[in-house]
Length: 109
Length: 507
Image (cartoon, rainbow over all chains, first blue to last red):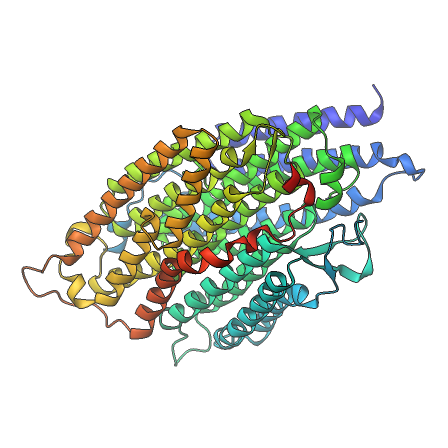
């Protein structure tokens, strides 16, 4: 196996581990961390694609590298937003979970 | 025969496409700089300008009969980015502009900055997010490559999620967080698909991909991943769990934006992906699976809507059901002879359904919000007497329902008629049966609500708030759009077919 294939396997493993965490963990913070694992796996795959697509004689295809920067920024923004919502939820209820035990009526009064 | 923009007969250099994206963004930036009540003023100035731009694009596309394109910075694809507006994009842009303007007028009363403060959080956020959603929707419609569309999808999500929790109540924060988790998982799936496609074909430009694409394992995996991701964002059954609490908990104007427009953004990308990028890849089985999910959504969403005690939740569950109709067009557009999706009347029907649902659902969420504001609650059992107090609002709600059920002459009728027709012609009668059952269930819950609303109250109903006439008029105007769409569309609904790739029409 060459280096690109190894990185591909690593990327796929990260995505798999992250997805498992995202689905099985009930806690929102762990879900957000798991999402970041999935994201890292995908970004690694961008690198693999850049290496494989280097058929034109460059050391690596620059387009996926340009794309991955945008993707990282987007993932960062998503994480920041999720954390901000989670903090607000914690301030409002004193706990941070996603089950729908909160009733709208009781709160609205 | 293809020009630089990669499409036959496309007019290049249409700066209106750029304006449709840049103006709302400029409004967002300017609002952030000036702050406070200026956000509302900027949004209200930009609403008519944006509507004018969308109209210009729509008229140019429909009268010219071919697509518009703009190559950003004169860098031709595959390295550069091209914006394209075909009939599909122009129709959806026009619809978005009309709905946003109506919601903007409606929201003036709900999101006014109080006179004694410089800046109030909810109004400031609402007007900025409204412009951001408009810009993101326009990028979704005119984006010419899969990565630009990914960024547009993310912009749409980031603008939509805070709308859910505008009032900051704990359960809306929870709904927003759940929505965000579904949405970012969906976009990561879409991104993996985009990487795989780039790795296989070396381009993400839609026109170039559609020429190169062939059925190999990587492409099929990419198609499956991207579709699954987009379905999570569109809230197609069984990925709809986030939608009812998010849409029902938001303030009325925000619910209208979310339900009428935001879910249509990711739906539009499914259409782009399946009809433009890879019409030959999904095969008969793939389209039947999408259709089956749509059918399940129709039955499940309608039955749950019937069982709701609260008006806003009922309207939200009816969105789940109506999204199901959108996905019935995929099996019906499938041509067994060419084993590819064909842009014919089924595609027109699907887009018409999207437009009529957007206008009808916008009107229904606004009316539901007005009834909530007037009564101080939205329990369906306690609606008696509202028909006498707010006749215009109840009428708008009923007209929206007419379109959802699919009674003539509404846009919903024409869409469902075309779908039924396609189901009969292609011999797939089971989709016709689902549609008819769905129509019956829809009329069931509409009757339930309207019969309560029309009952005279036993004791005088006390109004919690006076409802301005223009708010009711905005809801009624959207409902009338949805109703009259059926009449207008009979003459010009082929606008959707303008600029379709030639291969797809031959197929």
